[in-house]
Image (cartoon, rainbow, N blue to C red; front, side, top):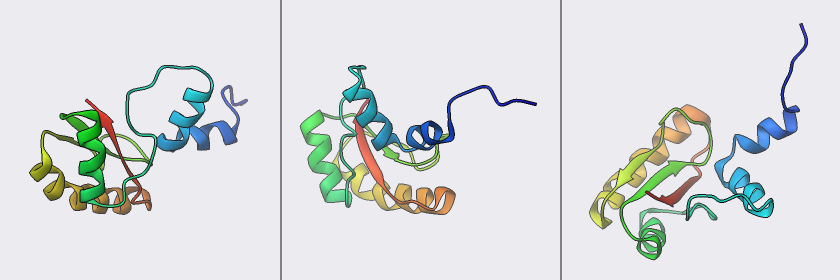
Length: 103
């Protein structure tokens, strides 16, 4: 059996949303606004969300399948959901890095 697909390094890069968006932007591919930096905490996530305009998606940088991801409509929801998403991401992927994208 022969594996047909991208090399392991490419799979690793695409498994990290922050890294994959950076690579995509450098290649001239359109990406969803936001997600160019990790967010430290709920207050930082609110700053980024306000610059993008609500609603936004709060996302784990690692993994997939909807774990560590929430649709956020305002500041209060961000403050409430940020620690939950971060804990979920850490438990599921071993990485609590979060980002915010425009929805």
